[in-house]
Length: 73
Image (cartoon, rainbow, N blue to C red; front, side, top):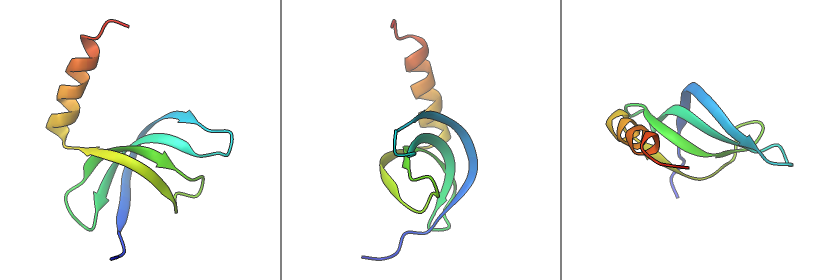
């Protein structure tokens, strides 16, 4: 499998932290030197390991925000 290259451009925020120190984060990340996308996933404390996550364009993130704003919790 080819190596995945990533560059965390901006840490937008941390949603939670596990007892082992892994954090669920929303970041702006450039994957394989491509245009940055918003990314939500778990990260190890040193950011060298990651869990499965999702990537969103700015437009998708804005639509998700609209959906969440209209959600009654």
